Length: 94
Image 1 (tube, rainbow, N blue to C red):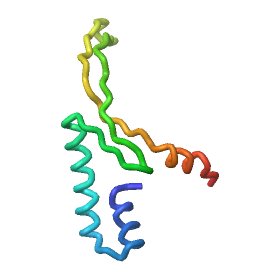
Image 2: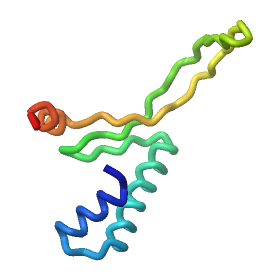
Image 3: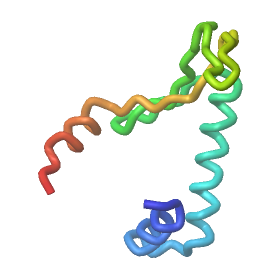
């Protein structure tokens, strides 16, 4: 499902204009992205958590040049679904 499809479905279910919903969806994504950029996790009860995971420094290989490369420690965004969300997905037998 794309962002446009999400907006269309919300518009159909709520009767609110698509442009208003698109603005809200865009702002939600911006707030989540900005929070994660600052190292702050975002918790949405019953849905899940957007968290920052820390990756340690590690050694990688450049196969084409047959050399080793040090990959520095870095942060990556991740999503951890809530238990209720996981149960709903697991129990869906479509």
